[in-house]
Amino acid sequence: MKSLYSILHSKISEEFIEYEIQLTDKNHPIFQAHFPNNHLLPGFLHIDIASELLNKELIKINKAKFLQPILPLDKILFIIEKKKENYKVIIKKENKKCSEFTFVTK
Image (cartoon, rainbow, N blue to C red; front, side, top):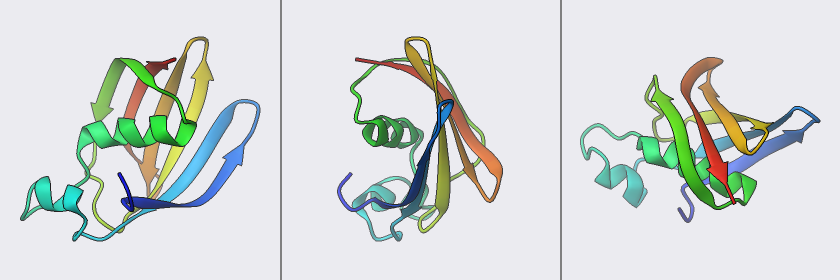
């Protein structure tokens, strides 16, 4: 995922970890491959980016919902909550939920 995004800021509290990231433009190979004429971030990358931000290896996805497209140059907010042995992640852009998922890591 080299150069797909940059981290704008992060915030860590007892309950949540938040990362705001900025995606690169539509010329990145990911956007060129995932619908060449309708560039968007593939759903599996929502999950991969979250595990990369946490620096954790993904073992299992418990559930995932993808609600709105994430496009090149979007600024998106990852809100990550640790719940027992898994993580709940909500991704928002412009304060609207784009996706929500839970996964287990090593």
